[in-house]
Image (cartoon, rainbow, N blue to C red):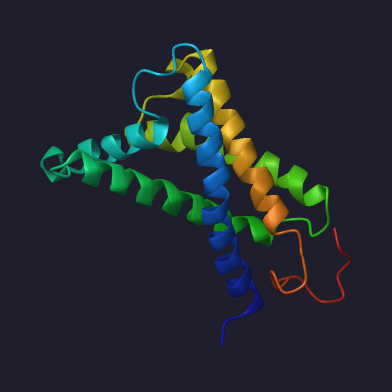
Length: 170
């Protein structure tokens, strides 16, 4: 039988996938309206291409449609993976959960675009992006995190708290 912490992680992963929907909508809309952002792929596509280049260039999907599917899959999988950890530290009451989620989204952007992705060599460091692109990506990650916090705010039946039942709510 799964533990309460396992349940939290699984529910957090599902919430992370769900939160990736409004994040993607915000990113695509900002990409469409920001000056100079219409050209070139969005960062999830850049990361997918970078992963392929890192692993082996011959492994790239043969069609554009397959590359789009893989980009979608990897983007939502990362949203789920990142979301899985948030319930372990998330406040259980509004508005603290939404605020903490927005901060968590900013931390995910920072760790990914300023740390992990450049360190792995799958995407350039965010300091090489335009101010508009950086702002777009920060905003999208804040949307993701705030949505994650909203989804995991401790509504009865939504998630099982992994903390002791007598612990004060945060």
